[in-house]
Image 1: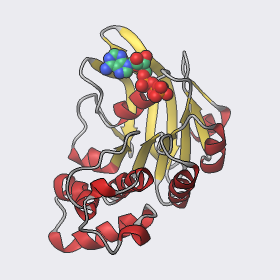
Image 2: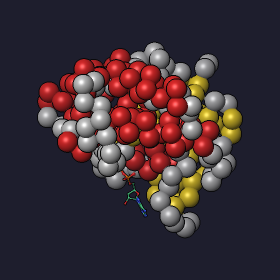
Image 3: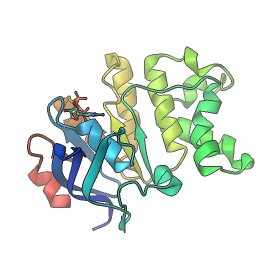
Length: 230
Ligand SMILES: Nc1ncnc2c1ncn2[C@@H]1O[C@H](COP(=O)(O)OP(=O)(O)OP(=O)(O)O)[C@@H](O)[C@H]1O
């Protein structure tokens, strides 16, 4: 089985108190997995634990393997940050142009050579379904984009890193139906080429986009479909 991420008995703790988990699941390469559960179950916290970006005061235990490499808590490096990329629920758009935003990770995390930047940005903006809308105004301020366009710009910024895995935290929760459909089309197009873990409160969306589902509640459990890929 070709797993990009494998998690065993992952828990997130605040001092000695278990806040989230334990949860176990695997993400098969190219699959889209839904991460579901009630508000407060710990979906966002699990995503943050996977990229070693827990808030101060929280720690994790259990096993995390990325591409069959064990990652100890606090040992995530730049390499890991480029392989597993978290796109937060609220799109963070930096000051500067659309192109600057699309290139941010390439410049500051991967330190990619200048000659490849434009090409990688275009490819990522196409993959995120935004290219047609912005190709004639790449130098315009990104702050002027609509909410749906911002969401796709953040997706493009993540995709520009050519990550193994994308962690998407409720990517359509703040969008109208039309923007939601556009973002969903972009996510659907990733199936097979990217591994995606998608937090969603919308069962219909999970049904539309996901191959399998991980359920988080108290205590965390995994659906039979998700267990099948573990
Ligand atoms: N920095 C923190 N310190 C202490 N507890 C925290 C911290 N961050 C989150 N929590 C707690 O961890 C639990 C999980 O929160 P989290 O935001 O991951 O849930 P969620 O499933 O994503 O919720 P929602 O669906 O509402 O976004 C909650 O009980 C929350 O209060």
